[in-house]
Amino acid sequence: MLVNLDAGGLSPTDLSIDQVPMAIADAEISAGIQFKPDLSANATLIHDEGAVLADQAYATWNSPWLDVSAGKQTLPSGLYPSHLIHDPLLIDDLETIAPSILVRKEWGFATGHFAAANLAQRTTTTSDDGIESDISIAYPAIITALDLKWREDGLLRLSSQFAHHSRILSLGAQIPVGFFALDLEGSATDGAWVESDLAALAGLAWKPFESMELATRFDASKAHSTGSWTKSVAVGGTLSLAEIAYTSVEWMHDLDGDGNLTLRLGLEGDLRIP
Image 1 (cartoon, helix red, strand yellow):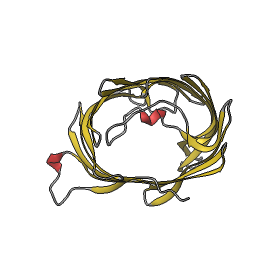
Image 2 (tube, helix red, strand yellow; image 1 turned 120 degrees about the vertical axis):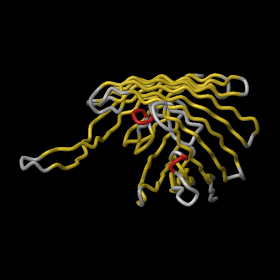
Image 3 (cartoon, one colour; image 1 turned 90 degrees about the vertical axis):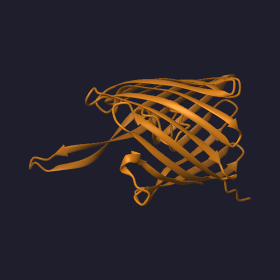
Image 4 (cartoon, helix red, strand yellow; image 1 turned 180 degrees about the vertical axis):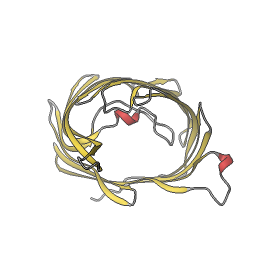
């Protein structure tokens, strides 16, 4: 279960104490069923613009040789780590949730991923009468990834996505450095159905206490449609208030514009039924 309530998100100069915008940023509930030791199913429902939608629903079969998942699921395209309230810019191209068949194979410290997916793209068409309408075009895609792990938290991922009007290559790393966690990732894309041509992030997180995390991140993205760059720097922190409750604060500054302050109160926890 996850519920996040955000306040702010605008420049402090545009806010007054009685005009702070508040909204549910995230709301989801997940359920898992273990049918057999090697067979399970998972489903996730989310709240989106007043409606409840099935975000994911898939089954997984585990064997000593490989793991196979089938259904609508998150695919291993990029890492896009986020220790802050807002997600990094490169998530627009990398995050992929789609009906698919995903195969995973481990070799010691390495894990290979291969997925065949059915993606969808929203586009606008114009009829002979000049009437515009939005349609969804489905198309096949192949997603591959190679993970290399070291120590307890170190991870390197090279991933690719090949599809109609969309080709994406990304390289990301989560690097433990003493008491800090260093995040680095970059992506290069090609095709008509991509958000950016290039995107990158560099972030640093630190946990001075078990219940507190401080983080900062630099994001950059070159828009495919205009060729213009968007760059931002964000700093923030998260404090756990109880076993399932936390509060976060984030200041995000657009290097070509203003800064925004966002506050978050969240609940996240597991509900287990014997």
